[in-house]
Length: 163
Image 1 (cartoon, rainbow, N blue to C red):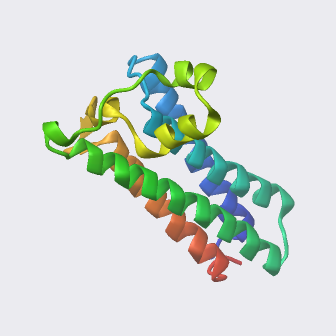
Image 2 (cartoon, one colour):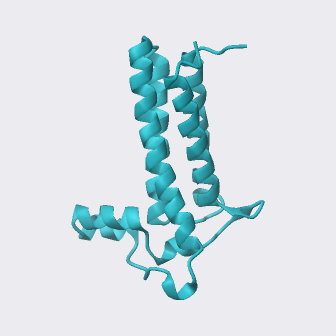
Image 3 (tube, helix red, strand yellow):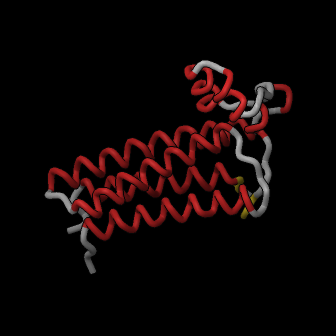
């Protein structure tokens, strides 16, 4: 059974918005405060989801499908790199963990944009905290797997695997 590229884009966007829903649940119900790398990963998930949703609504021709899927793949790859760095930081020995800095909201209000973005991409000491695991994997590890799946899914769309 072949599914249309429109449905493939829509399913990818649903996956992204479900992931954001899970993140909101962890933050607002379980009260797990997101670190700068977590927020960066959420922005990448949002970017992939929006690109896929726009592609599903637009229902472009072959060239358009390729452009949308490459854009979504680039965002998914970027998110995968950030989440892989987050997993790496979580697995550093305690003495090598970066120092904790001020909270992200404080940095946004008081630091230059470049310094805030650098912190969001490189991580701080609070990024080393493992607040939740499932099957031995932390939230950033699961997020990395989700980004990999989104990357592969969009590569398949760009390769014409969906009609």
